[in-house]
Length: 560
Ligand code: ARG
Image (cartoon, rainbow, N blue to C red; front, side):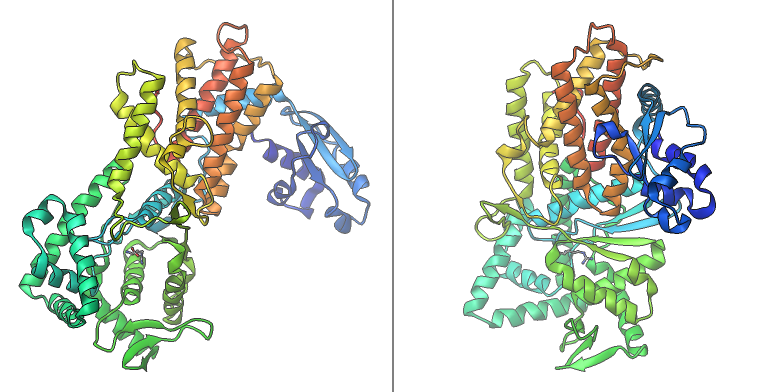
């Protein structure tokens, strides 16, 4: 039901050239109270244009023929209020959702435009951290929501595979590393020797020089250094791949930092030619304004930096993908870095730097403290996910001991629980991590939404629903609530996209689930004279829940 648009068109006939249909539509409100109708148009802003009192204007607007979607129009205190023909509106909505299926809620404003997302981007030879999990999950969902709005997306996993730390790691490996151990357990082994390197360097600072020398060798293409680096990278990516498979995410490019090694000279040269480089204590910098520290381009020893690589990568991506927008889904501790990069690009004359957006997020906490995947308390993300799957399995078997496909469902529910838990709060907030909480079947959890969908699926099966909607729909108070919630879905997608905020969608799915469960508790769905239309409503809820979960990166089991 496109009631806002219909109402706007109706008003437009009377208003004439004073306002466009879009402007009118933007002014339409939802009345605070039910007796005031379903939609309201405030005439106060028109008072100036027409030099008349709002209530007089309101009266002149309601003389035309009312569209059939509305059953009544009236004026009250400077507003035009319309009342929906609920039967017709409900019928139209159900027909639309059952016809459009998972494309319901889509938009086309992104058609022909491209968004490049920089997401996940873990550092090789280190544990996949909670921060990288957030980036992966938030980034994938924003990508899916962007596609739902018509955009083409390019998901780039900008692997952290370059920098002085790899010189240290090579030096650590040559001192204490054991090939067999690394082969069996690459990330814990490599990160352990890396931690040891730091500890020993505190007593023996010459180790740091050794590390620097190895990095220099690596940069100069020394065969031994290169061989080890390739190996570290290879085993790390294989380990990360297991996590991506569990999460069900994929990327269009794995071009990480090292990919830009042979491309940075060009950037530095360009900065030089544009007279933007300045010397500072032997280093080369770009000044980016009084309010920010300068952007570091080259260290005094000639080594390039994180920012040099990001500048180069941004230019490369613009040339390669010609993006309309570029999102960097990275924790908020890197806000300064991205601002420096953007401003440097702007000073280089790249107006498109305005299209780059850092999409920051908060931390994952455990007992109020930053959850660390480093040092002694190594929590490997893969084991977190496997624990979640295990716990999901236990919960499912308690509820449904006969479920045959329990392994598959446990995976969908366990992983889904972790994802939903991350995405249900505004991304800027910190998240407290608790497996028990996130796996509950009641409350604001992923399993709750999935369980609701599975319940509906069972009902549809039992009722043998074939997709037919009766022409004359009975409007009940309980069902009307659901109709209007289903009707909000396209707008929820729009908001979630505009704010780059998947939590708007998660919260909506929780609301829809609550409404359904309330309905289910109060209304007899099967074996009633209204069964057909009630099942049609349930089928639409299922379509929206399933599509909403998909956009969050979750699956919808048929049974749980
Ligand atoms: N690898 C980096 C880190 O773990 C994140 C990279 C983010 N993306 C970027 N283009 N800088 O901190």
